[in-house]
Image (cartoon, rainbow, N blue to C red; front, side, top):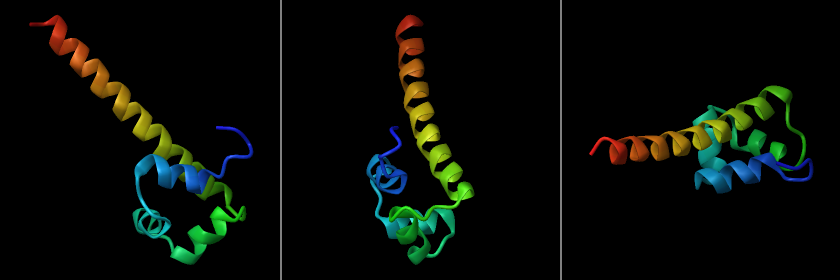
Length: 74
């Protein structure tokens, strides 16, 4: 992710959720998430969003590995 990419918008896009749904996932106020989307993001929120994106990526990688494992053990 580049410095210019907005992590809130990227996270919503990658997870297929709205900012309101993201706020619910993080137990945060929708107005806080809106502020984060406008560049006023606290470090802990930044880290939480990075972890959500990393978790999604790792789950996708794990699914691929499980498929490969199943193919190899036919």
